[in-house]
Image 1 (cartoon, rainbow, N blue to C red):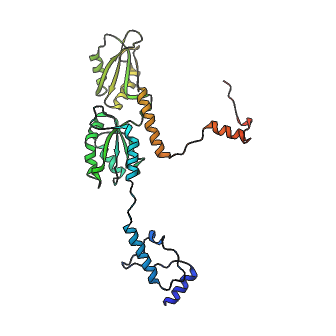
Image 2 (cartoon, one colour; image 1 turned 90 degrees about the horizontal axis):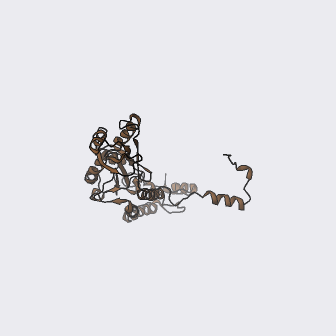
Image 3 (spheres, one colour; image 1 turned 90 degrees about the vertical axis):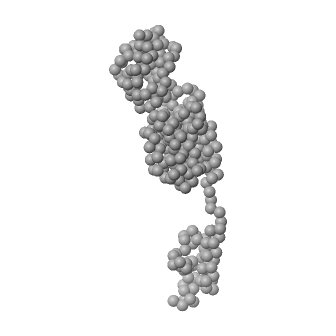
Length: 304
């Protein structure tokens, strides 16, 4: 239709008229959002020129980056991470600054080093992944090789970091990789015990400790693989091959390690929930009392 009719119809509808670009493609939606409805514009050439200018301005403007967020997250994690060249390994690893790599690809590469106990991609938007292996030897192997492997599939592979990490379950009182054997008869020496326990899996350490209840010996045994330790605990408890009076139980985690684990989880929780906090019950109760909303009939006291 003639330009005058088109202009009149546009003004009556109070909408923005968008012409195709020179390439024949429609103007991107993010540009349309910046073009307001123009009533009374003398011709469409000016409108088209304005849209081109907006597109050029957007191309020149710097794109937002998550580098600041990555660095802030890494700083928060620093107390719970250590170098893979440190003497004491961990079953858990933290993969940092893993951007432009899918969670599926990262998991696949991690699984090439051993069976995973934990894989957490909850914070992929921060470039952070947490990995845990059943076997500490798998974690040690992955710690030294994973950075290079992931670097091959990421456009920013040189920025990826892999560090040992506090295990996500370290706030628990139990360490499933350790079993404690108490009141072992004195005729079963350390070599005999190592042979018996070795049938369940590779032993990382076996140490005698004091504190036997009835004059017998006690040992703390750590397996390389958590699954082997669980199997040994179950069978030794059920079949009692070491004798009916021998006590077998899961190992305990040190208080300092549990404290560190709780602090680690609190950082993760803050990332997940932000600054939101549930209002304590006491504050709710005091608020209800002050507002006259408290009803004693709503409270039930159980008799012991």
